[in-house]
Each structure stands twice: as structure tokens, then as C-alpha cells.
Amino acid sequence: MKLSREEVQHIAELARLALGDEERALYQEQLSAILEHFEQLQELDTEAIPPTATVLPLHSVMRADEPEPPFPREDILANAPASEEGCFKVPAVLE
Amino acid sequence: MLCQLTIHEARDRLAAGEFTAVELAEAVLERIVALDNDVKAYLTLAPEEVLAQARAADERRAAGQGAFPLEGGLSGVEDTSLLGIPLAIKDVLCTRGIPTTCGSRILEDFTPPYDATAVARLKAAGAVLLGKTNTDEFTMGSSTENSAFFTTHNPWDLSRVPGGSSGGSAAAVAADECLGALGTDTGGSVRQPAAMCGVVGLKPTYGRVSRYGLIAFASSLDQVGVLTKDVTDAAILLGAIAGHDPHDSTSMDVSVPDYTVALTGDVRGVRVGVPKEYFIEGMQPEVEAAVRAAVDVLAGLGVEVQEVSLPHTDYALPVYYLIAPAEASANLARYDGVRYTMRVDDGGLNEMYKATRGRGFGPEVKRRIMLGTYALSAGYYDAYYLKAQKVRTLIKGDFDAAFEQVDVIVAPVSPTTAFRIGEKTDDPLQMYLSDVFTLSMNLAGICGLSLPCGFDTGGLPIGLQVMGPAFGEEQILRVAHAYEQSTDWHTRRPPL
Image (tube, rainbow over all chains, first blue to last red):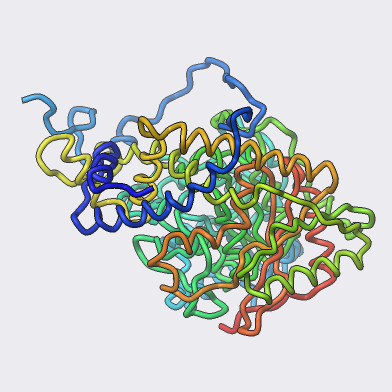
């Protein structure tokens, strides 16, 4: 499974990762080698096998719907790179 | 030296009034000051808070009081088993008011507003928290070389890695820079460094310990574990952190036994399986020899040894490295420059996301985000992610079948002893192979531990892995303890 340069760039866009030219070339080579190694999975017939997403015998766990005091807003915003008027501040989305 | 004590030794002598928690904490802090410039186990130390906690423990003991009250709807800890015991915490578990970096630049300045449940339970039990230990970035690695800050050195040979990702915790325990530590294990990250540093490392069953406040890597695989100087300490620490938590919907509501009761020394009639697929071409011959010798020791103690087969073992590596990166690519989407300290501005919002993540994440994290994003992307989901989940079913089925025949399975932990710093950094696949004997257990959700079973000719420790079925912690602890008590590997100390 050889990844093209364009595919690597497409994945980086989906993952919102800015990559330099060297990184792109390195990942193209390494991810291709890793995916080639993983081709061995295709030799197994799994047509009738259900997928496992979790090993737990738990489904739709609910807790009691009781209000609890939330984290203080200032504690949460203390880690934000930028905040204003009690909100996270981000670069403008609309012109 | 007080710092060399096990948790159970220190607990008994604190209770007998032979020394105070402050004296014990000071002894451990002195040890850290003396050694950690070479070992580099800790990312963050909080000496003043350490002494304040130790004083509080002494005051509580003097007043005849036990554990602190548990908050947040938790139950479980009701004794004083850890009052005044100095422990280290892997830097992926949130600690209120103390920086928690995950070994990543992107969280370099992050200070959590709350404690992880495992940490809260230790505090409630009266433990003294020393600081935060080094880890591969977001726990993605097998050597701590992927930490954004520095590499931890193996106390047995400072030119070698301690294993990973809980390498800081394993090295701190091995070097007597703490009495015990918390780690986390997604594919071997407690057991593999425990083996490489010659200590005990226990990965509990998925759902046994709350993941609340454990910064997520792969949510269906992550589990908090313990690293200790002997098996008794592992039983004590597991008892302290296990139990249901309303804040984690994947924590199981299963009662927590006193695990130390399981340590009877009597393993007669226990059925021990040895999986033929875990002795592979290319593994270090001394590792195989030590593990086979350990099986003979167990046989001498009266266990019934039989060969078992886990036929899909070969597929665990690709399955793990598709599922774990896929889950990671989703979990790490939250580091977007908005909420967590680091931001790199580069024009608009989308450019800010990309620049922040491109700069903030290290090479291995980016590699796995890319791999996971690809496995989940349109056109490849069925061929990679869904296929991996189906083969995960087969791997789990292997263990279910084996545990119908045997009570525990014993095997090597890693194909080699600790490798040299820099030896595998250029080849990600070679690095991944270091976890080839530990990944399957996380995929199956079962429990397992590593304990010392010998040394290679270079004087490096070798680990024995004891695996049990889901919620079979008492069985694996009993077998490990019986082996430990009939050998003296756990009493050896690195030449520091």
C-alpha cells in the first residue's frame, strides 16, 4: 500500500496538521511501510465475525440526573490561550 | 535507607512509630536530588507540597484518624493503608493545581482544575504525592524517547531506555526515588517498562480502575496501573485505586476485594498455560531461557503447566496500531489551540488549528494521528478500522478459549531486555515490535502483570508476564507472589 504525496497531504488536512516538506516525505515513506506490513490482516476471512468496539458488557450507562456544582468558569478559562468576557476567544471565523 | 523500603514495610514501621511520614518523605526527596539528574524520572517535583502532605499524614496518625473522606460519589477506600506513603504519578493523570503535560509541548503549561479519580483515591488513602513522572508524549511510545522534554535513563544501565511509556514511573521505582507509582497501560506501557527496570507492573482489567482524569489516548484500551517493588505492594496499590466511579461510564460496578488476602503462597493445582506463539524467532535467547526457567519454578511449587495456543497473536500488532491511532486521532482533536494553553496564530481559525497542532505535537503523535485519520477516512474505514475491530474479536476469543483450560497464562513481557537510547528511534515498526507480547491483553481487556524473573549477561532485568481473565487479578497476584517468594530477583537493586 503505497501512499501518494497527495494522499499524505489530504490526511494532514483532515487531521488539521501543518506539515513541512520533509515531514510529508518522511510520513509518506513510513506510513506506506506500516500499512504494507498491516496488509497481513487481509489474509483472515472475517466475513462472519462481528466487530469489537468495547470489551465491556455495558450498554447505555446512565447516571442519576442530579445537578452538581459545575467547575468554576475561571478555573476552566485559566488554561485558555485567550479569553474575553468569560468566553474562549478565537480568531475571526467570518470577515 | 528509608527510600529503599517497600510500601508494606514502610506502612508497618510508620504504624509502629519507628519514623515519621516527614522523615520518610525527606529521605525520598534526598534520594531524588541525589539521583534524578542522571535517571531523569521526574518531569515535575513539588517538594513543599510533599512535606505539607507528610505533615498532614503525621498529624492524622497522631490524632488516631484514618483516611481522608472521599468525595464525588466514590466509595472503596476505608483504611489507612497508605497514610504517609510517598508515591509518584505518571504525568498523564490529572493532578489539581500541579502541571500535567502528557510529555507534550502542547500541554506544557496545562494545570488541571481537578484530580483524576485514581489520584483522588490515593490522596484519600493518605498517600504523599511526590511529583509527576516522565512519559512518551501522550503515552505513545516504548522508551520515553518520545517525551517532548527529555529521555528517562534506565537505572540498571544509564545508556539504555527504561521502556515506556510509563518509563519515568518504572525508573523512579527501580531507583528508590519513590515507594511506588501509578502508570497507564494502553498496549504494554506499565508491563514493558516494569520488565525493563526490574520492578513489578500491574495492568488491571479494563473497567477495574476509573479512567476519569486520565488524559485519553485510546479510550477502549487505556487503563491505569501500578508499578511497585514487589507483588504485595502491587496488591495494596491496586486495592487503593480500584472501584466504580460515577464519572467514568466504563468503570465496572464490581466489588473490590482485599487483594493481599490472595497472596497465600499456595499455588498447588493452579492451571498455568504457556502460549506457544509467545516464543518467537529473533527474541533474545536469555529472555526465553529465563521465562522457561520461571515456568519450571512454578511447576516445582505445584502448579499444573500446559501448553496453550493463542492463534491470532501475530495479528495483534496491526490490529492495535489501527485501533489505537484511530481512537487517538479522535481524542487528540481537542488540542486545537482554543482551550489548552498553547496556540500558534497563523491567520484564520483553520490556519491556527493546523499551525498549533503542527508545532505542538511531536513526530510520533503526528504519525499516529495521520495513521488513525487514514484508517477512519472515507474509502478505507472497512478495509482498515472495521477489519481491525473484527480481528480484535478473534484475539479476544483466543483468550476466552484459553481461560477455559487454564487459570493464568505466563509468557515473556518483551522480546528483549532494555535497548540502547537511540537504537530504535529511526524505525517506528521496530519500536512497535517491543510491545508485541503485551498488546493482545489490552485488545482483550484482560489483566496482567510483569515481575522480575532474571537478568541477562549484561546485568539487565528480564520480566515474566502473568495474565489472567477479566477481573482475575487475585489469581495473577497469587501466582506472581508465590514465584516471587521462592526467588530473590525482587531484592536486587541497580548499581547506582
